[in-house]
Length: 132
Image 1 (cartoon, one colour):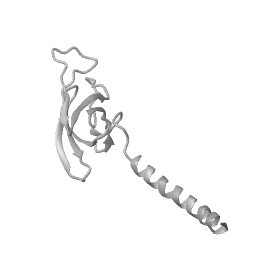
Image 2 (image 1 turned 120 degrees about the vertical axis):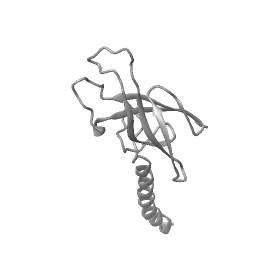
Image 3 (image 1 turned 180 degrees about the horizontal axis):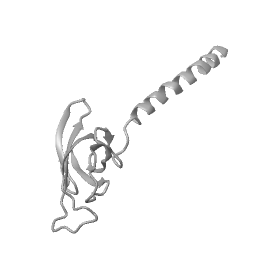
Image 4 (image 1 turned 45 degrees about the vertical axis):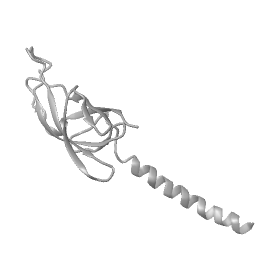
């Protein structure tokens, strides 16, 4: 009986340490609420990565425009088997991805007439609706 207690005392910390590694590994990627270019994020299931702003023709918030403009972002979907698939996301327009709809919901910072947005300043929010 004493051997069982000794084994439990040794095995319990080892099991806890291993479970912490598994939990930490899954937490390495943020959710899809504040994602920078080049950063991978889990978005309600899929693992995605914005890689390039293809177009940012939004009307600056300190200007009057006839057209609201749009934002298009080149994206990578990283499948469970590691395969990468390119796709494009346009602000506010759902796109079919896997078994659901992927949407680029917001882009920050707001565009201004007198400020150039550097690629490193962009932050995106995404949503995925669907899945099993």
